Image 1 (tube, rainbow, N blue to C red):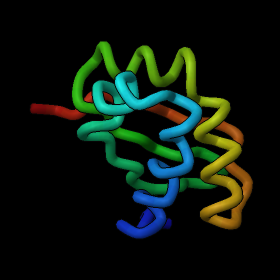
Image 2 (cartoon, rainbow, N blue to C red):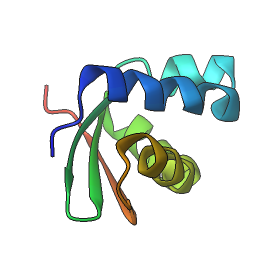
Image 3 (spheres, one colour):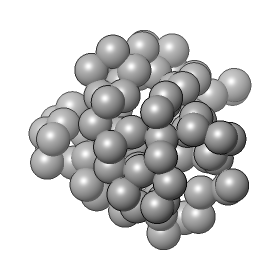
Length: 84
């Protein structure tokens, strides 16, 4: 299932108060919530550092929020750096 632009924006909006303004701008500036495959959500961050920080600190929050917005169970969030 491909994540629509509206769903992608809804996930980001719900993450903003959890992450905080300054970190949100740095981490989620170029994030893309791409697709759901089974119970996996694939997310692409702007670089390797942002991907590592998002996965370490916010993967659980993303899975909970995405489960509600996408109306399906997300058990794992795979956050990968975008290929330049």
